[in-house]
Structure formats: structure tokens, C-alpha cells
Length: 165
Image 1: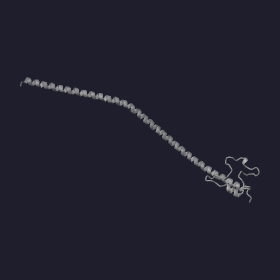
Image 2: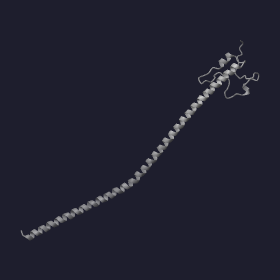
Image 3: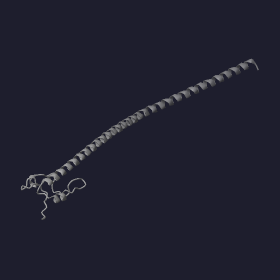
Image 4: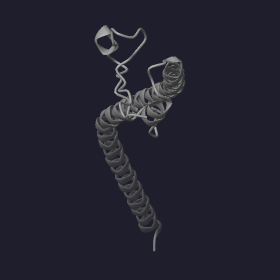
């Protein structure tokens, strides 16, 4: 073979190699462009999702704040209920003590009253489980002159024993 043919083959080989390199570069650029376009699409979708996620986070934060507020309200109501229970217990003790003192005063008045017989007083001072008189005709709410006898000072509306002794 002669040198011209060899040179032609070398030139053709170089052209083919350069063409292959050009095709490879073009394919690489095309892939790079496609990847860039795909990345832009993903970023656009992520941007859309970012606003939705932000709204969801805001709703979650608001719900958490409402839950904390409700918890605080529940704790305040529990504290108020506890305070009222304590206050009610205090009032119950005071009322019980007052009831006992009142019953003692009725018994003392019955003992001092010469018109009241002790058997009748004992029968009328039976107490029930709350400590109040069950057979007593006296009313705690109504204490007027109408319930007192005008004949005997200090007499009350409690019936007296009329059976002969």
C-alpha cells in the first residue's frame, strides 16, 4: 500500500473518531439538558408542595396550641373543682357543727322548760343519720311568735305529753 492510501485511512479514522467524539458530546449535552429540565420540574413540584406542607404545619401548630389551651383550661377547671370541693367540705363541717350546737340548745331548753316532761323530750329528740331531729315539729326555717305559746314564756310548739301520770 502506498503512503497516500495510508494517509487517507488515517484521515478517515481521525474523522470517524472525531465524529464519534462529537456524537458523544452531543449526547452528553442532550442528557445534561434533559436532567436539567427534569430537575426544574421536580423543583417546581416541590415548590407547590412546600406551600401545602406549610399550610399543614400551620394547622398542626394551631391544633397543638388549641390542645395546650384546652389542657390549661382543664387544669384550671380541675383546680376550681378541687377548691369548691374543699369549700363544700368546710361548709359541711361548719353546718354539722352548727346542727350539733343547735340540737344541744334545744335539749338544754327542754331541760330548763318546766312544762316539758323528760319522757316526751326524750321521745322527740330522736335523731336520724344526719343528726337532725326526726320527730321534732319545730322548723329550722320558721321561728316566729306563732309557733310559741303566749301562755308560757319560752315555750315552743313541741307537743307536750297529755297522758295522766
